[in-house]
Length: 110
Image 1: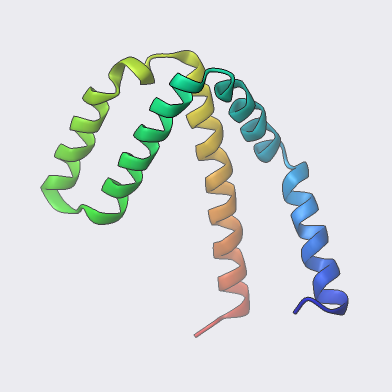
Image 2: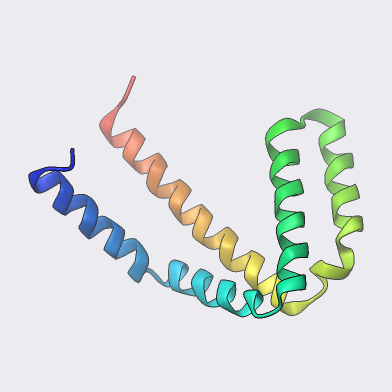
């Protein structure tokens, strides 16, 4: 995989991802929020708890846990810097998910 044309293709692909507006926006927002370490720590706590809920909960418990999380971090989520960062992160993640879906669909891996 790391030899020849596949290596070059992957390297070019990574370069294109880094040049995308979604990635640039994410990196800009990340740098800005990191300038406030305590806020960044709280945002990471929110992100971690959100990830756990998204990947382990289902049904009615899921909605209740998300609502609890939103209440717990309501003060943090109200900060425009946090909102901008989370929006940029979500946009970049969605782009990467779409890319992955396209790859798997096109290669018809079974």
